[in-house]
Length: 263
Picture 1: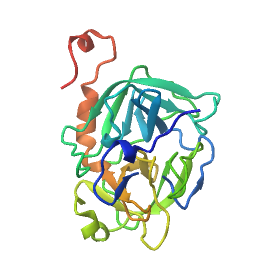
Picture 2: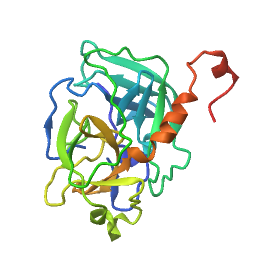
Picture 3: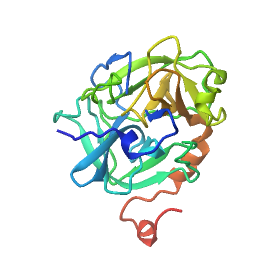
């Protein structure tokens, strides 16, 4: 069984905020989200933390930059529904290189995204697939969804099975409040109706906000009581950086790779 530690213990967040758990949702239909990645991070001797993520190319997973930890290896589990059992068709791949956004601020969580280059390419199957990135900003009022293996209640444990919930994109004014002093409308999305309990929470960080089959956001942070709205990194603002970075990647072991790391 994987030892799951809540990442808000490992990574500092703004006061009153927690790393992105699915609240108010339900168990997802097994393998209905083939792009989902379970990201396991070694945080110390015989200990590990976890985040969500999503596959955008056979060898690249997107997650949150605050999930980064330099203490040990990172591995990605693809094609999983229940992460505690050895399901047929699941693929576990070591991460060759982690590439957090160069302007990530771990105090404000601005630019909270990271690319994970996998050591080996994933085999795309019915249970393992990619999701496209949206280059256009999602509109206020759009009904989207988010999924993850995080907690399902504020006092609960991480879920072994993938959970999902429908969640509404709110106007920026909802998050422009004293609570979210670091909210940047040009780089972040305000997601989750304050009148409902549906939300992401601890353990879901790095997972995608999916709207019309495309990744529009990345679970980043929110209030410590798990109530909406939550803050997501706005994918459309970073597509140019993501594409440019991926073009510069070389396959592990290639001559270009041996010359040195990507800058």
